[in-house]
Length: 111
Length: 113
Image (cartoon, rainbow over the protein chains, first blue to last red):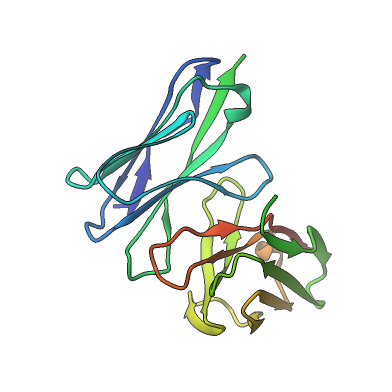
């Protein structure tokens, strides 16, 4: 079983819609949860970090964490063509430098 | 603009060459990382430095040799690489405690002929 699993893509959404990305993790000791956006040929860019159960909003992005269910999600509201990218879920423990990444979900926003 | 910079952006080298990748961060972080990323895969951790000391080596072949000259610089020395080492090499930095956000540089695209 993989440590971090993301919903398989690609995910295609129309412009203005909500894109919903899901991630589950196996290590119950995980304390830190991150979403990175990676455009083709570029490096990962941190867009959200979440450490406590509940929702965290930043602009059009909302991260949701449920530690009991070992589940973290990212919602992208009012999706724009510029949101077309691969989104990587990453988790780690507070005592560990090593990030565990999911395989990534590729999102395409249709104009 | 990223506060983690990497040079060069692109590098092509033969299997007998020696080259170095450089990374510099201006975020005051005391942990720095090297990752390797192949196409359509997530980044794979190679090395971690914490307070300029090697903290983690993920069983990386000795043809990759990291160096951390000071708190803001990180190098990766390359020697006798193989074509399968062609990848995007990413540097990252963070606070010197596990669990904190890691910020990536733009990467060096390496091609080994």
